[in-house]
Image (cartoon, rainbow, N blue to C red):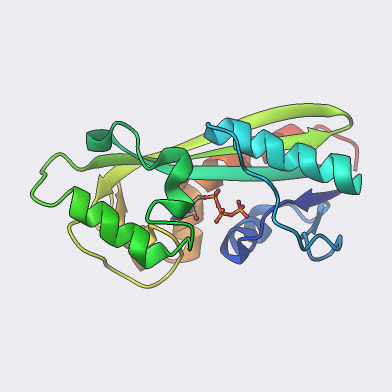
Length: 193
Ligand code: ITT
């Protein structure tokens, strides 16, 4: 079976490549000649994931899955959520996004947050979605330099390190994307090879 993973984020591709079973041939957007910006205009994480997967099927004809993720901060009523990538502006700058979030939480002790991923799978004319959540808290400053996005300021529950201080294997075991992907993988194991 071959499946396109519809992401322009090379970090996500790297995370997913490590977890996907060998009998599934993972194609990137590069592999199918898709170099355009895929629209993400929905108001929910789930809506964006479905939009990305459907876009690839409609315009390129491939079965495909797409992930949309966001960081939901309790004190900010779930923001930045679906706007996580462009929280500090259209330049989608991870450092600027983290700085803005740290500023909004300055002197705030309630720092609970969660990462959420929804993966939408477009396979054999059907759409299915798989959700993964990872609970944790926002640290007071940045720690570590692995990973991407908000990783340096997110400490998952039960751990003393941020995602950016962890090996990718550990992040994958406990992360929102890892959990959603495990659900996707057990779903597609059912299909013939
Ligand atoms: P796509 O091409 O897959 O859309 P993207 O970077 O736009 O890549 P999303 O819209 O799914 O990804 O994610 C929004 C943002 O949420 C992303 O840019 C990061 O800032 C943040 N994010 C998502 N997953 C993350 C993770 O595992 N660790 C840290 N930050 C993450």
